[in-house]
Image 1 (cartoon, rainbow, N blue to C red):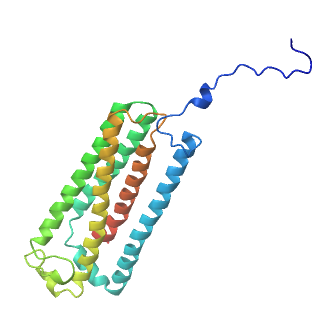
Image 2 (spheres, helix red, strand yellow; image 1 turned 180 degrees about the horizontal axis):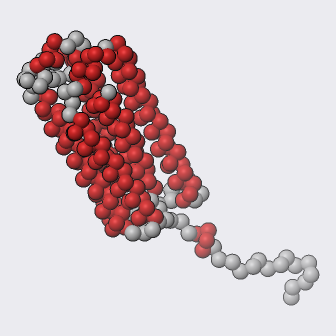
Image 3 (cartoon, helix red, strand yellow; image 1 turned 45 degrees about the horizontal axis):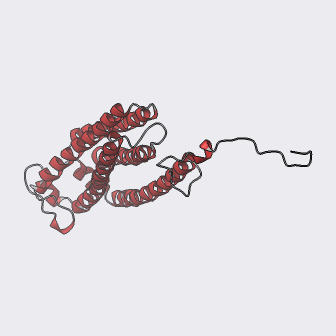
Length: 234
């Protein structure tokens, strides 16, 4: 028989809430929100290093342009602004599709999310295809970076008489080449995310990988928005 001094019986509770542990939640995180915030912080730190990388190249471009403005103005005339404009529109559209993919996964519309991710990859492929055409048109006429610079052909032969023209194209190939490498990496990451989204790995409860891929892709687009006018227009 219980007395007034006996401890009160523990209330009947269930540990369902405490036992709930989503598959995506790593053991060292308290909640999905904490895990997402940590991943996002890590991505932002990575993006800062990417900004520093491209900032160094922008500074090099600005210095050499200040030293040889006539050379840079003449050499940039050999770049096709139509190709640059089309590629700008392509990347801006790809930013829209990757943003839509995040929107759709937040509403558990997995198929629409996947379609937009694949559209992003397709647009990136278009971008790289145009860059390939641009590169080949220059290589065929001896427009290479550094000591391999030997321009010939009606559209490029005047560059042989332009002092420091090889410096412009060295900067052009380095900047657009590194940016193109980032596009290829982004294509691979987004394709991987699309595959696992199709397999049902992501939902409105967990879509960290999709959002981080989107952040990376937006940086790639922003860098090109700076490269395009610097190299093609001014």
